Image (tube, rainbow, N blue to C red; front, side, top):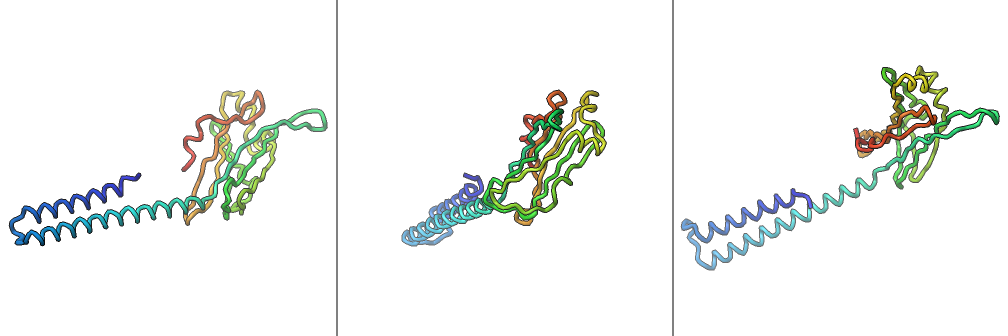
Length: 211
């Protein structure tokens, strides 16, 4: 349970106890015993009512917040590396970006961002997707591209970079609007494996998903 209602209830309880103590022991209150009893009962009833109201209101706010969060869409996006034969002879690496709305809630302005990073070079591949996409709940899609060719056209030779000892990173992000706020999510990080010609997921990159 959150500490906020506990603090508020404790303050109400402390004020109620203080009031009761003053009624009983303060000589300035010229009250009969019956009036003291009536005042004490009123304070207890009032304090109990305020504590109950605090818990009820806080529970309502928590339930309302949970309901709002349940309307938030969420994207599962991953990079899948495969080998494809060309002319039934040579094979080339192929990257599939597979993405799925894993909730029943709709994206109204989903934008996927793809960034390739090397030692001193950055390539933006976000043009592979249209901006501000609509995506209904449970919708699943995929996008194919040839990493060696596509990224080389933008100035980074994947295999040459790794041969020089440079790590080539692949950052996959997405953003959308929820409750009037633009949310940016770092979905996953990968790095190029020149030996197997695939994108290896970087273990631990899930620790910092939200920007």
